[in-house]
Image (cartoon, rainbow, N blue to C red; front, top):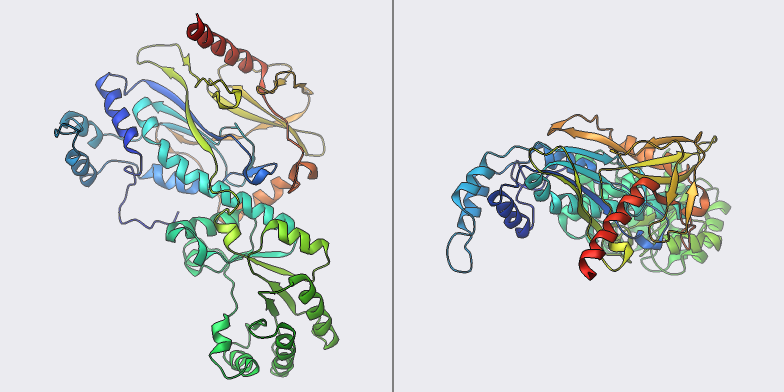
Length: 491
C-alpha cells in the first residue's frame, strides 16, 4: 500500500463515536466480549449488475500497523467533555495504549465480482477492537470498490480497446488520486497518467503532450517537429488545438519525417469536437498515407455510456483516455457500504447471540450470524448463483436459496454443482496469514472472473439481476429474530 501519512499507525482514522462507544464498552466490562461484524454494500453502483471488490491491500496495511501511539493517547487525553472535564478516563487511555490487534479477519479477495449484501469483510474478535475498525474499513473499501467497478464498466464498453486512466488532476485530493489510480488499474485500465502511482504501485504509465506545448510555438507544425526531434520514440500528437483535421495533416507530415529516422508515428489524439466523425476522417487520412498502424486516441469527459455509443456509431478510436468520470465515480459519489454487528458472545459464554439491525424496510434489516458466501458454477465454469450461509449451521445436503426482499423468489440448487466460498482468511487472532497477490495478478484475476458471468448480468444498462439469496436455515433464523423484535415492539 502507498502511505501519504507520516506515521506508522492510522488507528485514529475513526469517528469520535467509535471511541466514545469503546470507552463505554470498557466501562461496562464488555470490551472483551467476542463480536462479529460484516462489511457489505446495499445497492449496485452505477445502476449496474455487479461490483468489483477492491481496497483489501490498504486494509491489510492498516491492520498490520494498528495501534495507539503516545501522540494518539496525548490527543485523546486533551479532549474535553461538555462540562469541561476530560472526555476519556485515564484508565481507559492506558487500556488503549496497551491494546494489540487480535481479531480474525476474513475477506473477499481483490478483483472478485461481488453483489449487494454479500460480506466483503468479516471481522471476529473483541467487541471494542472490532468496533474501532468500522470507519477505517469502510473508507478503505468503499471508494476503491466504487472506482474499480467504474473502471471495469468503462473497459467493458471499450470492448478490448486500451483504456488509459487520466484522472490525476480531477481526483478528490492526492490520496484520492492514488487510490483511484490503483483501483482503476485493478478494474482493467491498461495504464495511468499518474507517475507517482507508476513509481509506487508498478502501474504502467502513459501520456502525450498538452495544448500548451503547441501554443508555445509559432505554429502547430513547428511544435510537432520540435516534439518529434526531442521524443522521436514517443510521438502521439494532440491534433485539436486549432483545427483537428488540419492537425492530422500536420501529424502525417511529421510522421513521414519520423519514418525516415526509423521511428513510427504512434498515434494522434482527439480531445474535442465530434469524436466519432473526426476519428473516422482521421482514420481515412492516416490509412491513405500509409499510416495504418498509427492509433487514434480520444479523451474529453468520456464515460462508459459515451464510449459504448461511439463504438456503436463506428468510431475508429483504438485507445480511450478517461479521467473525471472514472476517478470521481461522477454519477455516483459513494458506495453505500455498511458495517453491522451480527453476533455477540459474552466473555465466559459458550453460546452466540445473533444480532440484527431492525427496520420497517426489509432492505435495511441486517443479516445475523457468522456469514460466508458460497458461489455456484455449472460444468462450463459459468457462475449462476450465490448463497449466504451461517458457518455455524450444518451444511445442507440441498441448497435452497431465498431472496429476503422477495421471499416468494426461491431457488433450489443442484447438489452436484461446483462451488467455492468467497471469504478467505486474512488475519488469525491478529496475525497476518494471507499471501497477497501482486496488483497485476489481481487485475488479471478480475478480468478472468468477469468472463465467468453471463453477459446479461454484465450489461451496462438494465442488467439481469444475478441470483443472490440466503440459505434457508439462515433465512429462517433471520425471520425468527425479526418476528421476535416485532413482538416486543407491538405487544
